[in-house]
Amino acid sequence: MIFNEIHYRTDKNEINLQNGTEIIRHAVRAVIFIEGKILMAHLGKTDEYKFPGGGRKDGETVNEALKREVLEEVGYNVTKIGEKIGVITEYDVAKEGEQYYFKMISEYYIAEVENIQLKQNLEDNEKELQFKPCWVDITEAYNKNKYKLKEDVYKTPGISRETIALEKIIKDYY
Image 1 (tube, rainbow, N blue to C red):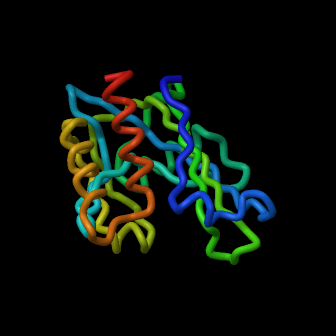
Image 2: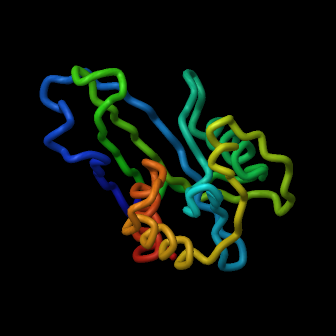
């Protein structure tokens, strides 16, 4: 594993880590390379990149979740799931109230896909964000996200996490 990071979406002092009740979400994210390009979901509404993946459903294995999420978000069938290369654990204020805090553990796996794009099956929020599959140079995706983080515009809460992962993969894997 090349990275294991902790990230606070909000100022750490505003998150009730000491006395709050944890609301946890486990997520999986695919890292897919073909011919020097990485498969990302480009979010047209915010002009940022994210790894295909998302939350695991109750009783769902890592492999089942990764295959489902990649097919839903970018329209590709996963043919092979390789090593776990990283984990990012995020903490945030929970929308349920100050007596809670949100913790998301995102695991990043190397994966391979069939080189045939199928139809996406996006959730409503993904449609609103205009998810589009995109084979992109990893440095271009990193630079775009890094730039977006500096802008004072709307961006998704996950952009920091994805930018951290891109940076670690460029530095230690790619």
